[in-house]
Image 1 (cartoon, rainbow, N blue to C red):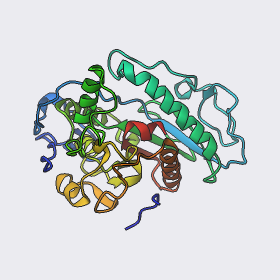
Image 2: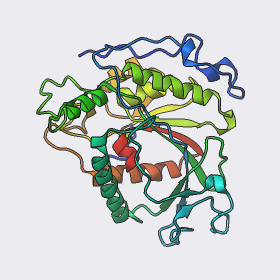
Image 3: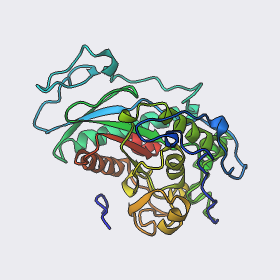
Image 4: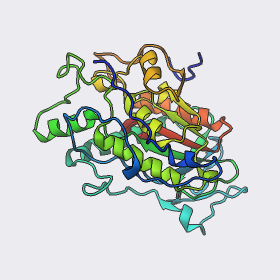
Length: 335
């Protein structure tokens, strides 16, 4: 087995709709459409119902540069496509996005809870510092900017779809716990000594979110879809990918894409054998049988998560695919 980056009985997985994935209604060269209203899937236990929806932002493009070479446009507040001579293509408005701080939505789709705003800003600041400290350690600098679903991929570029998993039971439990004014987290080892939150599944809302993404993929040009999916080996990301991705896409569980490990029982995963029983269409060659990364008395630092993310980007740089889907967690995607 190759692992490039590391020094209660499970319920049946949600089923893909009876009529199949919308892209499976035709060959890979010609998708058809299907709405979640036509779908049927197994419902999970209903002890939690609501929560913030999963967001599906536009994909990003990334391009690598040697650390000794100036990154085009670094002194500017905008990013864009890069010409072969290294200069910025500032005329393409669809591929220019401000890198200034974005207001965090607290209402509507993609919103976050009020209590999360301060924590999120702290996390972003810590990851920015880690990124600065690690710059150049891996022989490249990555420049990324947001693009639309239909954006093509230029020379030496990769189009990355970053997807946070659908809503899990631990997400709803955290919201209820925090809104009641209690400190810490409901799934910390102190509050969950019986490990009730180990590798929680998607809620009904999370299942609907995955079905919505399935429909979105079904409406895209097949020539612009991801060519491979790398997925955190936890039930929420695995179920999200299992439902939303066409059956013929290569789907690979990757240990490096996990959430910060330790102390929080929801970040402890099931064994590889159990995961393979639940999601048979996913490859598990990059994970161990048992969870050797989670400890009850130690939580991984954000600097260590940033190291994982940096090594994973280096791995993607050498992959042959130019369009890649990553299904992971909030902290890893921030890194």
